[in-house]
Length: 291
Ligand code: FAD
Image (cartoon, rainbow, N blue to C red; front, side, top):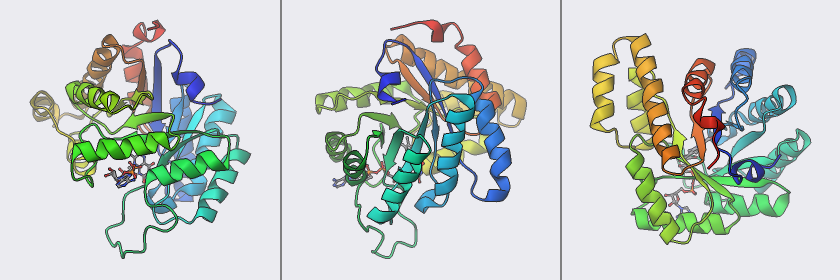
């Protein structure tokens, strides 16, 4: 099923993200965790792509498994940094063969040892979006950054580049994590003003371990509000209490988003079925509602 047919209805959607194993030795444990998340029957699930294509085969394998065994539509991530057109087309052929119809088209992070040759056939995610749309019958999405992408000189420039990506054929956007919903609302206002009209799915990251905060900030450069810092200060030393507080904080963000008319929510619950389940249970009545 195409993602556009899931997200463009009046139903509230809740989706979860998983990451594939880096090595084949971990494959079965990761597959089991991903299937346990899928057993919650989310609206769809996304499967990340290891930097530089390091998980390529496993991304497709897990995404296909979720569809075949659990009947959950999957969205496979694909990055193009350092990739040739031929290798991207092979990846798309593999997806097609596995019944995957949805791709999140990404540039990927530029490796630290960048030697100037990293941009091969694609420079930006917009080039990949255009190529995928040209190549096959896929529903294509992209990433966006409510606090601005770290490489962008200004937020204004980032939004202009985002418009290029959407004009290239991107049918929806998923946001980088944020911990203050006002940042999302403000971003939405600015991109709508810039003429970007596709659904912008907020990506919510439940922080359930104190150590995750540092990584999240390092990875995304996102702002951590004082209210959240206080939670980590108070509960960070107690894993069970921190987990509970993290699930509730994420739930609270989601409830506020839905109360403000947002209807598609994506949760970076990664390979943690208990966290995905905790959030889903907290929203059990709300998820029955339509907009
Ligand atoms: P782009 O859209 O190409 O943007 C990157 C930068 O280039 C921005 O600063 C933008 O303003 C600029 N730019 C874009 N187009 C132009 C243009 N035409 N001219 C000039 N400048 C331009 N990484 C992974 O490795 N695997 C994953 O599975 C993965 N999943 C992700 C999922 C989400 C929802 C998000 C938000 C990020 C994900 N990432 C993933 C990280 C992502 O690959 C990095 O953030 C990467 O640095 C940028 O990718 P992009 O697709 O947003 O790039």
